[in-house]
Length: 161
Image (cartoon, rainbow, N blue to C red; front, top):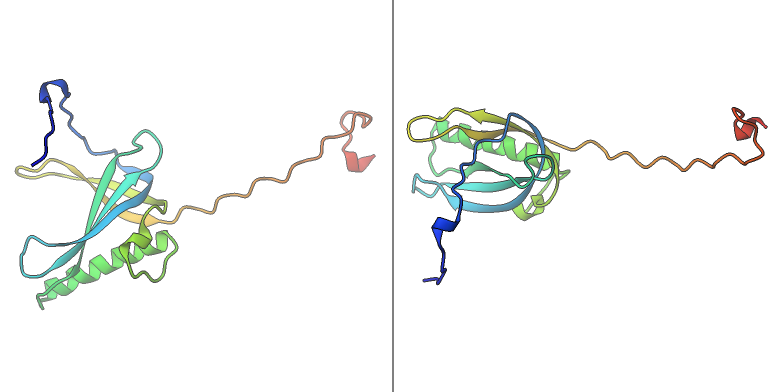
């Protein structure tokens, strides 16, 4: 039990609409291996992404990768293959080729391509991450330029004197 002293009448209700389709700078901020709903020993890697800049900074998106399947059907093999391919994309986006722990993926910025998947039944539209890409190399700052001396005539470069 936890004592909260919470008054819900003082909190504005919020609906989170999906973020618009597009590319966002984001990073994984949490990960955990969890049982799937099937209850047969299958496991999924649950990843929490946070958008790190722009209008939607701070918004969270989630990815579940079904990496361990107890079943031996073709569908189970396909599920694992897709999850491994997506994990490979994430690893490449953050510059990792081998990981022992999902925490090695945390707090490393990448570009994610976000789409909106249509809801059905009781479920609303939601975001899904389609691809993961490395951020381009950050350009090195330009070398400082020596100012021309005061005795250099206008329009003449210092090396032309």
